[in-house]
Amino acid sequence: MKKALSLLTVSAMAVSMLAGCGSSNTAATTAATTAAATEAAKTETAAPAAAATEAATTAAAEAGSTDLADKKVGVCIYQFSDNFMTLFRTELQSYLESLGFKPENISIVDGANDQATQTNQIQNFITSGVDVLIINPVNSSSAATITDMVTAANIPLVYINREPDEQEEKRWADENMNVTYVGCDARQSGTMQGEIVADLENKGDINGDGKVSYIMIEGDPENVDAQYRTEFSVKALKDAGIEVEELDDQVGNWDQAQAQSLVANSLAQHGKDIEVVFCNNDAMALGALQAIEAAGETVGTDVYLLGVDALQEACENVKTGKQTGTVFNDHISQSHSAADAAVKYLKGETNDHYIGCDYVKVTTANVDDILASLG
Image (tube, rainbow, N blue to C red):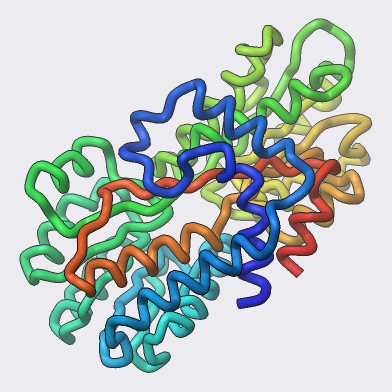
């Protein structure tokens, strides 16, 4: 809990200037909101720890007014081997226990990145009589089917991390379903990646030819986070008046080894023409770094490297200059908000159908704060 509260304090750098958790819908995110989040992320000093402590204490007290000890929670994670989701599920487990759920009544299963496997797991949870489900879908496109299956059993549902489409979320509201989504707006993370480059003294133009030549390593192409991070990282450069040139765009499926291979191939083909490597997550950025170093190039001198998630190893690389920047994907705030939403359903209350949280830009200016919170 100490680590969780510390990290929530860092998250307050952005949340203090935004509505934060409780947004009405991802589609409603405006340019003004993104700008506000960006300014908030530049703040180097975290909000007072007492504020985070008070928020967590209040949540625990409110949960304590409902007997959660015998309530059963089913949690479906799309893939345990995903670095970020490992952080997420570990924190979720810890926070659920702090709210009063018995460890033996919290069941977290690995979908192994297979929708059929996950669907069977959901059906098993329904049969076993869980009281609430928290689901990180393998395929966001399966959300309507999952929702119908779960709500037909009169079980409240909290989606996490992988957002169903706007039409599906609208259906929850129209039909007054006990279903919500908790997550960050990936457009914000992509924008922050691009802004980190645009804020560099040379604006990413290492060879001085008047344009930024980049390669893009994408996550799962079906995942809206991958789509938005890909689009908005480049859009941020264009919005800053920077000419861009795409040299390569490949799908790395969030995987470090795949990214290493893809970036190695791109470097072999394009060499020093590559000025920026955008990766949709830090796991792939770690793979990209391996390829960059194997090619005899140096981040910060020959090429710039961006990721998302703020994994500890990636943050260490930002601190030492081996990675240009990353974006903190606040697994603490998201996992806590998901658990809090589940508790509200169990208390007979309702939630907004979209509960949003904010990203935080991570550069050398604030990486020590992030590392201290992750430590």
